[in-house]
Image 1 (cartoon, one colour):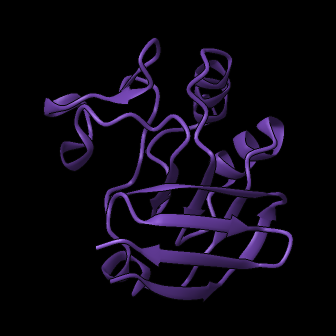
Image 2: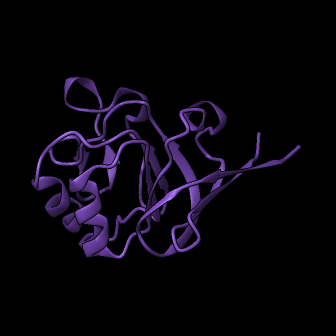
Length: 142
């Protein structure tokens, strides 16, 4: 049985996109934490354990904030040029490095301050990010 949840969101990088959720409670890094050619997160001490081996191409990434620095937006650009762009991103804390990368790549980005998003969304749920309207729609498939 499917259920729909709507979260109010702060508009950061405008646009609308839909894709499967890819969620972590960890701060997210790309440079050194993801395989550029495959668009997959690395595991072990270098990566994000709960997302190890998972492709983020076409996914809606939901994470608190970034791990890294100004290289975050450059690394996002390289992933996009390799055909591994995420569909959209959702942060719980405003992150200037993620914001810059998303604006430059025309990737919708919103901030959802409601912490329950991390409990109510599961990997694979269909997520629509409508940054123009300031909302996130979650269609739970589980």
